[in-house]
Each structure stands twice: as structure tokens, then as C-alpha cells.
Image (cartoon, rainbow, N blue to C red):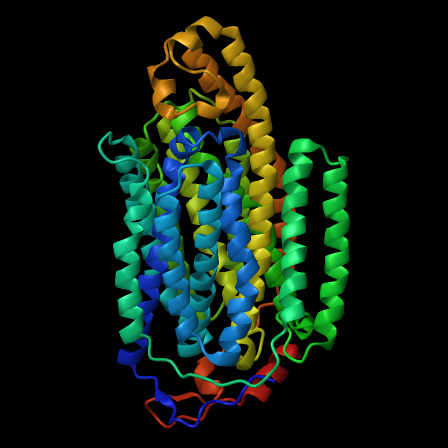
Length: 538
């Protein structure tokens, strides 16, 4: 069982204290979200400079894999020891990794530092969501999704613009996409140090080291199986060996967690139908949606011949969609306590947008691309935070961090698998298409300095004359657009899950209050944690 709260008097959750803590969380989330959007527009130039175009998917996969591995660890350790120190460690890790990425001179080193960034970024995401659940009741929590949506919207606008400016600027370079994280990260660390006033806990429980190791083996073998299977063939001995390792690791993980006193992912969580459906829904949507978002800037730069800054501006419609739907749905959820309808609608919007995106081509108008991105953002704003809210609301307050981490873990597994599968399909088709385009225009390619697909950057495409440029543009368009159709069956599963999601009444008690670590300003009676669990398990 989690350790008892420290003997210090409970915090008083005044509105001012909640707002100060929330401000610290926003500062931490800004660090992570800004980096993701900066990298998206700079990625084609980065992989071109470092010679990794054919392995482009690993820039995103390394970050997602690392962040996914540590999510359950941050969640469980936060429940046992408190979340403040872990949150500061996550910011520090992310900032340090930004320095390493900026100094990278090889593609391999860059991918490693992206992985270290994921170790910090995974903590920032999980701990932020868990701390909000600690200080704000589920019924009021939706109101805080608006500022979070605005923050990610700001990052989605500022990140591509700043990343495009650095990438397109001959005097700076893509390295500044990471150098800029350093002052932002240090500022977030300082804000968190002084403003993040949370209770500290002490636990004598034995840590579930075996669970951490086996879960890491499960995740790593699954992702590598997907990546190698797509590139080397699903029947290759390497892919089959990784599949066997995944099965063995999964069996060992379940056996370990059944006997652990403080399991990293308690199997008791899966007794709640609402938690299971919400978690599976998040995984399905993560697989279908985030894999598409990861490669859209590349399409806009290469297939449409736009600069990094230009493709960043085209992300504005997606930001508008996110902010509009997350703000609108949050207000209605706070007033009515109903969230299922928004989840169903969100899946439908995403599926419809994916169908539309299969028509993307090199000559698709920017208005049409902007409309697609707006719809994609609208779907995201309607569903992702509601999935987390449903999962948190289905478990006792003592397991908020673990439940949040588990829900996000499976969503990120879906996203990582999606990026790996989507990226493999895209890059394998792209390599063939580009090879054919360069071979058909070998003399012109040599005169333009384009010697191989791995060294291709947007500036070279823009400078190439006809018919080489059209050949390259068509290679990207023909490689990317049809792959969106492969995501539709996953979204069909997500739609079924959204329909069977049980809508549990939202709690009126913050997590820290339910655990006795904090009190409200007024002397109001609160529901006991045991009563809360009983009500949700039926």
C-alpha cells in the first residue's frame, strides 16, 4: 500500500494556491510542448544534414519510446513519494538533453539525445496531469483544460515559426531549436522550485524493480519488432526474435505484477470497465492520429515546396481547432458533468479527416490542407483530455498517479506503434520513389548536388529545376497520402470503444483532499476514498 501522508499539517487548497501550482505546471509543460513543435518543422533539414533521411522515423520514435518507458515509473513513484521532486528532475533531464541534441554531430548521437529528452518529457506529461487531479476535483478539472489547450496552441504556433526561422536562417541553424530550450527550461525549473508546494511522502515499500525491467523489455521489444518488421520484413529472423522476446517479456511482466506489493501497473486497475475502455480508446486514437501529425510538416515542406517557417504557419488551423473544441467542451463538461458525447464526436471527426487526407497531393491547395488540419485539431481537442479524465475518475484517489501513467502509457504505446508503422510505410515507399526520381534525372540531380535520398533537404528541392523538382515532389506525395488510409481500421475500433465507454459521475473531491493530504478552505464534508471506489466499481 502507498505510504501514509507525512505528519506535517495538510495543505489548504485555496484558490490562490491552486493557481500558483497550476502556473508551475504550465511552465513545465511549455518546455516539452515547445520542443516537439520546433522539431517538427526542422526535422527534414536535421535528418538531411546528419544523413538520416531513410531513418527519419527514429527522430520521433526515440522520443516516444523513451517517454513511454518511464511514464509508469513516474506515476507510481509519485504516488509513493510525492510528485514535486520528480517534476523538477524531469525538467532538468529535458533541459540537459536539449544541450546534447544541439551539440550532436551524427544522426545516431542526435537520436540518443532525443531519447533522453523523452525521459524528461514523459515525466512532465504524467506528473502535470496527476498533480492537477490532486488539487482539482474531476467535476472542475475540465475548466483547467482550456489554459492547457491554449498553451499547446501557443506552442504549436510559436514552435514551428521559431523552428522554421532557425532552420531557414543561414546565420543560426537547426541547433538553435534546442539551444532555445535551455533558458526556457531553467526558467521553468526556477518557477517549479519556488511555486510547486506539494506534500512530501516517505515510503518503506520495496520498489518493483522486476516490474520496471520487464515492462521496459515489453515496450522495447514491441517497438523494435514493429520498426524492423516494416523495414526488413515481418518474417525476418530479427523481427521474429523480437516478437518472441515481446511475448516472453509480457508473460513475465504479468507474473511479476501479480506478486509485487507495489506493482508499477497494478492489475487491479483493469477491474474497472471504464478505466479499461478509456485506456484502450486512448491507445487506438494515439495510434491513428499522432502518427499522421508526426509527418505532416515533412509533407508540407517537401511535397508542397514550402519552407520550414511556411509549414509552421500552416499548423495554425490545427491550433485553432484544438483551442475551440477544448474550450467549448470544457465549459459544457464543467456545467453538465457529461463527457461521453464529446469523445464519440471526436473520433468521428478524426476518422473523417483521415479519409479526406488520403487525397493529399503535391498540387493540393493550401486552403484544403488548412481545412484538414483544422478538423484534425478539432478532433484532438474533443477527445484526448476526456479520455484521461474518464480514467482518473474511475480509480481511487490513492492511485491517481498510477492510473494517469497507465492510461498515458498505453496511449503512447499506440502512438509509438503508429509512428513506427506509419513511418516505416512512408519511408520505405519514399526511398523507392526518390530512387526512381533521381535515377530518371541523374544528370540534373548531379548538377544540383543531390547525390542520394539520405542527403535531401528542402532547400535542395526548392532549388532543383524541372523535371527533377516535380519528380521529388511527386515522390513525397505518392509515398505519404495513401498511408493515411491504413489508419482507418484503427479509428473504426476507436469509434466502437467510444460508444461502449461508461459515463461515470464526476467526483467533486480533489485527490489530495480525498487522501487527507489537503483540506478545502471551508469545512466541507468529503466522500471517503473507499466510498468513492465502491461507487465506481458498482
